[in-house]
Amino acid sequence: MTSTAPARLSLNTATTKNWTLREAVDGAARAGLHAVGLWRDRVAEVGTGSAAAIVRDAGLRVSSLCRGGFLTAADRTSTAMALDDNRAAIDEAAELDAPVLVMVVGGLPPGDRDLAAARERVGERIAELVPYARQRSVQLALEPLHPMYCADRAVISTLKQALDLAADHPAADVGVVVDSFHTWWDPELPAQIQRAGAEARIASYQVCDWTLPLPADALLGRGHVGDGHIDFRALTDMVEKAGYTGWIEVEIFNETVWNAPGEQTLRTLKERHLAHVVTP
Amino acid sequence: MTSTAPARLSLNTATTKNWTLREAVDGAARAGLHAVGLWRDRVAEVGTGSAAAIVRDAGLRVSSLCRGGFLTAADRTSTAMALDDNRAAIDEAAELDAPVLVMVVGGLPPGDRDLAAARERVGERIAELVPYARQRSVQLALEPLHPMYCADRAVISTLKQALDLAADHPAADVGVVVDSFHTWWDPELPAQIQRAGAEARIASYQVCDWTLPLPADALLGRGHVGDGHIDFRALTDMVEKAGYTGWIEVEIFNETVWNAPGEQTLRTLKERHLAHVVTP
Image 1: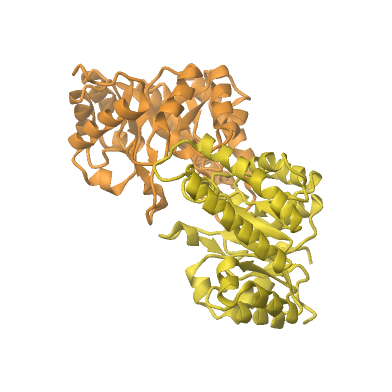
Image 2: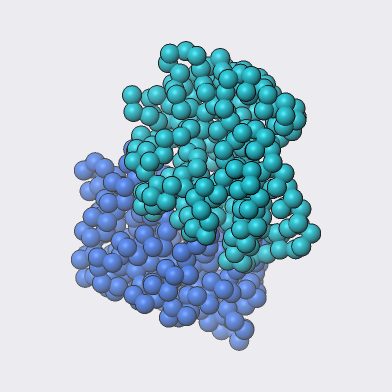
C-alpha cells in the first residue's frame, strides 16, 4: 500500500473496461486501493469462486456487485427468468463476500407506457427477493438512475422513490445507491440523503461527473470527477453527514477513459479523489 | 375551419422549423387550428407588430411566446442584460396578445458548480420581472426542463420546483408549463399536476413524445406524440382533472420532423392528437 492511497476509494471494473478481472484487481492493488466493485460479466469470465480468490489473494475487498434488477417485465415467463437471474446474482454476491448487490430495476417493457404499473411491479419483485438475499447476508441496493434512462433502464428515477420503495423492508435487507451522475440535479437530494442516512440505507456511494455535450451513446456520457458540473465536495459532505463512511466507488462509462491505459486511469482516479471528493 | 380540426391543438412554430412565421400561421389556419405558439426568432424576422397582424389576420390566437429566461448568470453585467432581454420578451408577448411567456431559466454559469445558488438567483430574478409582466398582463410560465438539461439549460428540473418558486407570486403573474417530454418520468408528477391545478398555475400544456435512442444532439430527441414511451391519454386526463382547459401545444425538436413538409407534419399532429392526446 502506498501512503497516498485514498483509504475509501474503490475501482469499479466498468471504469477499466479493457482490463480482465485479474488485471483490474492487480492494478487496484498496485495503486494502493483496498476495494474493487465488480460487474457480473467480468466475474463470469473466470467463475465466481476464482473471482473471489483473485480479490482475496490480492488483499482487497469487493465493495459491490453490479448488478441485479431488470424486474419490470409484465409477463410470467420473463418475470420468472428475471427472478432466477437475480437469485443467481445474490448467490454470486454472497460468494464474493460483496456486502451489496446493486439493483438497476429496468425500464418499460416494449410497447408498454404504464409507468406507474411498472414501478409497482418492481416493488413486488424486490419483496420476493428480500428473503433470499437476507439468508445470504446480501443487501439489495436500489439505484435510482438518471431520468433520461427511465424508459429503457430504470423506472426508479429519484432517491426519494428508491427510499419509498425500500421502506417496506429492514435497512439491512434493502438500501439505496447514491450515484452522483444519476442524482446531482435533484432538488430534493439534500433532504433525501439526510433521510437515507437517518434510515441507515446508504449502501453505496458512487462517483463520476456529468460532462457535456452528451455523447451519441447517452450511456457513455460520464466523466472523471472534476471534468464536469458536479460539486463533489458538497455531495460527499452530505453523504458523510448522513453517516456513510463506506467505500467511494468510481464507475465511469466513457470511450475515452476506456481507451486510456488502466494505470493512467487509476492515477487520475486517485488525484481527482483527493482534489475533489474527500476533504484533505 | 375543417370540421375535424382539434379545437385546442396549437402549432408551436419550432415544430415546423423550415417555415417562416407567415407560412406556419397560414399552414395552421389551413389545417383548421385556432392557435400557434411562437418563438421569438421567428417573430423578430418580421417584427413584433407585423407578427401580431399576421396571426390576427389569419383569425388565430397566440398560445404562448417562447421564450424568456436564462436568468442564472452570477455577474452583474450579464444579469442586467438578461433582465433587459426578458423585459423585451414581455413587451413582445403583450404586443402579440400572448397570454403566456414561457421561461427556460438557464443552466449553471461556466465553471460554476453551485446548483443551489443558481436556483436561488432564478427566484430573485423572477421576482424582479413580475411587476413588469403584471403591468403588461403577461403571465410568466416557469418551465421545468428534463434533468438532462440541468447543467446547460434549466436548473429547474421538476414541476414541484417550479411550483415552489411560483408560490411567492399570484397565479395570474407566475404559472408553470407542463411539458410531457420534460416531466413524464417524474414519480411526483400526478401529485404536482393536481397541486398546480389547485393553485390555478397551469399556464401551458405542451406535448411531444420521448423516443429512443437519444440522438447525438440531445436537444433533438423529441418525437411525434405516439412514437415513444409517454402515456398521453393518462397525462392529459391528469391535466384536465386539474382544471386546465387551454391550448395543447405541440413543440417538436427533431431533424426528421423538420425535414418533412409542413403540411404533412400538421396532418400527423392532428391525427396523433385525436388518437393519443384527447378523449374522442
